[in-house]
Amino acid sequence: MNYKQALQHNIFKIISQSAKALHVDCYVIGGFVRDHILQRGVAKDIDIVAIGNGIELAKEVAKNLPNNPKVQVFKTYGTAMLRYDNIEIEFVGARKESYNESSRNPVVENGTLQDDQNRRDFSINALALDLNDENFGDLLDPFNGIQDLDKKIIRTPLNPDITYSDDPLRMMRAIRFASQLNFKIESESLEAISRNNERIKIITKERIVVELNKILESPKPSIGFLLLEQTGLLQYILPELTALKGIDEVDGQKHKDNFYHTLEVVDNISKHTNNLWLRWAALLHDIGKAPTKKFSKKVGWTFHAHEFEGSKMVYRLFKRLKMPLNDKMKFVQKMVFMSSRPIVLAQDIVTDSAVRRLVFDAGDYVDDLMTLCEADITTKNPKKFNKYHNNFKIVRQKIIEVEERDHVRNFQPPVSGEEIMKAFNLKPSKEIGIIKEHIKEAILEGDIPNEYDAAYQLMLEKGKQLGLTVN
Image 1: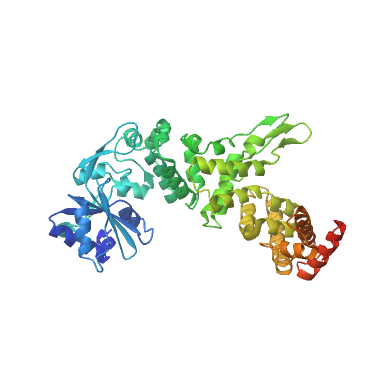
Image 2 (image 1 turned 90 degrees about the vertical axis):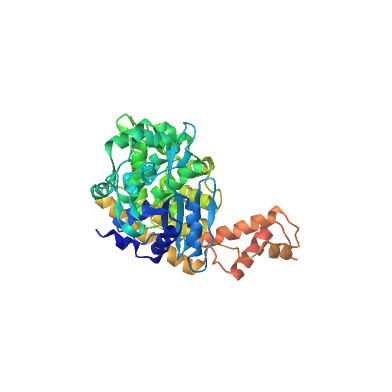
């Protein structure tokens, strides 16, 4: 392969010339090189390693670029970053690192290119391209990273026990790359993750979530979650998921393994949406089944109210992992809470009233909810599979028809509380809420259309029943 093709963008010539002016050797290293070889599309970030002062090199490059972009300096890490032509370029001086047991933050000292490649997490991320005049475009591959790319293998450059113990986040990165690239983790490396899994406790929740999100955003997330479970990492990160694993049997009656079912649902939904939070909803939609599981001799295994329990668990899980507790968390909660509603509809004759209530409760998220429920069909029985999907098509069509006719999505009552107060000369009171609820129920049941005149007339009737006098 002609690696010079990777360096056609004018930024590389400018970096090369800037380094020459400073009498510094420099290289492009890591993900940019790996992704070029894998033909993974246009790079959005580039890592440059300088044998010397990376911050000075960044400043020199900025001076030589049009518009002299601002250089962000991160003194703590000895790095600098600038943006040019929609590309984020990070500069660092070559270094070697040593670690202590209680932190993933290393003690850093200046080093050679070889030292810098030694500290890289995986052989495929230690690949470097020379940016110096005399060897411009030459590949430096001390750990057979090209061979590992060919064989689709994730392998650490040095002893995996040391690599993972030094920086336990690398265990999650190994699994994330396996999931993103559909690579295998080399067996010795995989065993080392299992041996060192408890070390993940020293990693901040925020860094763990970044990797979890990348696993969830990969084409087939189950690859990553199966590896997290297999290596014992999942029990420290998402015990709510490991609690779903296993099949209990009483009197010859079993339930399905809800852990493996969940991973099937996540893979299914990933074929249809890039919405990260809908993928989180798929991952967590059944977490309430572990604490609500019961066996009854009459009906067998039950998981009553698991959606309600699961939605409460979503909040606790997001809080523990320091994930956003804003509308994103509320969206996941709502999806988990409502995850069985369309399934119930799809089993019965679909009434307009039931569809109106579904649209009313789900609001703008009704399409997402339907996508989640369709992904939740994991039966291996072709007849049942087709029946459910056909029924869901009917439900989707009904949603369109009901929405066009009744406009209950993001429902606002046709008659406001102020109008009720004015009509009956009322101050704020419980009667206003009773009348509003009565109008809403009548619209959802289809007793009256979602229109002002019909609602106003019903308001007068209900007021009369409550003993109110029209003003």
